[in-house]
Structures are given as structure tokens and as C-alpha cells.
Length: 435
Image (tube, rainbow, N blue to C red):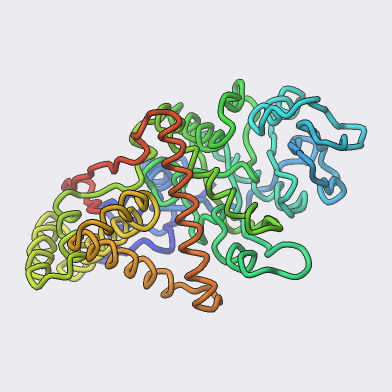
């Protein structure tokens, strides 16, 4: 298998100095390279850091006989025919009307998606298994295309891009928003998956994995976040997990506004249980202290904020001595912008209950919160993805309120607030990630 440089990697010094990956790193090569064997030290480093992506054009997918699909179902229909010729195990997790079919395993009472998937996993005899939710629209070819990643013996799991389909029939405004900004859509850039990187987790709405790498499977005590927990345990065990957006599958949006926002509330509530297991990996932001202070200064909208931001940006540039001046300036300015963006998200999404109270009692806090919400809105409007501004703003604000509410409710329920605490990050000469 070959590995090529990722499209977003920037090259300097005649192609011998690479800048890219996630978190951002630099690598100096003895000679310019754009493609290498995966078995070489350079190829392994590229795969681990995101500097490179696997070249799979000449890699054959697995045989259908080697892959079994597990579909957990609760009061939904399953299109088994679309997955032919793959074997499909349907786990009816306590539906009010039992799901018919020859290869259906039924729980008389609802046990949650983690245990439903584990029930299916226990019946898998093939080397590969795919977990697919009933509301995901895909074909057997989509799943088989993902199996090419297992040409890399270290890859334990891989997932496609999951995009909202806008629901069935007439699309309501929230369904149009979800089609453009589904929380399951992790973007168009392929990446290794690990905490702290561009793609930090994978949803098991659609996930293909090596059966023997999963062990006992999902943590059945988790009703939500069980997919994040599984992926992070795989990464922590030394396995590779990959995100491949070249394969795109659909996800049906909830049919009611209440059900749609309820999913965001539920996603937020998973933060506290995950923080109890994985600590700082669940942090709502990863901030360089100096850049965070400069970003906060920008949000105050005071005249002294610009000199502070300029001084901190210049300091960040000095911490990148090996890079050309233009690249240093671009990275330092981008890092400051990323800090502002994260702080805006904290105020508008993760911390909004506290931010709202502070804004109500303090003019200074009101200025900062207003700036944060305005910045977050402008960032969203810069990437409208075909949506009209009203739909975009309404969807953004409501989903942030729902997610943040779920996050706080989960923390209060668990009496563990670690999921609300940002994680500090500092730059180093070896890893000049100043985000």
C-alpha cells in the first residue's frame, strides 16, 4: 500500500519542509517526497499524523463473505435488501411492534444501542463487522469500499462521511439545516481519528471494524457516547482508526423539531460520562494560554485589545523559527483566530447558561458574550452551504442551546463538571501546534 501527501499539507524549502497534519506538525525530509510506501518510517509517520492519506485505488475490497452488518432497531424500518449480498443481523431493541425477519434477534425490553450492538456482535463470525443504524441510507458497495483500509494491518475501524438527507418527503426548515450541518458530518477531509485532532471521534451510525479488535464491544453502561468511548479505547490500545469522506452515506433527519433538538440535548448529556472515562479528551476547547488571553481581549472590543493581540501573535511567530516568515505569520494569525472561535463557541454553546447569567448582571460580561455570539454567527454565515441566513442562524442558535443544556444537565446529574473545563495547550519547537 502507498501513502501520498494530504491535499492540505503545505511544502516549503523545495518540498523538503512539510507543514500540516492535525494537530499541526512540521517534518523535514532529506529529499522532496509526495508518495511513499506505507511500510516505511515516513509512510507510518504520515499515516499517524495526518500528513498523508492511504492510496487505495489498487487495493481490492473485502469479499462480501467476510463482512457482517449489525443493525440495532427501535421502532423503525430496516431496508435489508439494500445491503445484499451481505449478511445482516437485525437486533430489535424492544420495539413496540416486533421487527419481522429470519435473522432478527429481539430484546423484549429496550437495553440501549450499546447492548443491542453487542448482542449482534456476539453472533458475528466474519473477520469484519459493520454497525449501521436503521436511519442510515447506504448500499453494500459503500461498506465494502471502506474495507480497503484494512490493507493496513494497524487499522481497526473506519467510517464514511455521514450527511443528513433532509428527511422524507417535504423538508421542514430544521431538516434543511440538518442536511447542511448534520452533527454526524465530520467534513470533507480524510483524517486519522484520535482525541485532539481534526476528527476526534466517529459516530457508529456507520462504522466498519475488525471483529477481533473490538473485544467485548461497546460499554453497555453508556446509553450515549458509547461510539466515542469505543473509538478512543481502540486508539488508546495502539490501533489506527480512520475517517474516509470519499464514501458518503445518508442519514434521515428527525421528523419533528422536538425530536431533532432532543438529539442535540442527548449528545450533550454524554459529555460527563465520557469525561469520567477519558478525562481531558472531552474538553470543550483546547487553548494556548497566551492566545486565549489575546482572544478574550479581542472579544472585549476595547482599544487596547489590538496591541495585545499583535504582541501575542508576534510572540507566536517567534516560536516557529524553522518556518518561512509568511508561513509563520499565517499560522500565528490563524491560531489567534482559532482561539477566538473556540471562546465564542464556549460562550454560545458549552457555557451558555453561565454566560447568560453573567451577561444579565455585568455590562463587561454582556459585551464579551455579545461579541462571542456575534463572532460565532459570522463564522457560521461565512460557510452557509446553500442555506438562507435565517435558517442558518435559527438552526445554529437552537442546536447550541440544546447541546449546551444537555451538557450541563449531564454534568449536574453526574456531579462531574470536567466536561466543561477547557484543556491548556502550549507550543513546542518539535510540534508547533499553536491552536
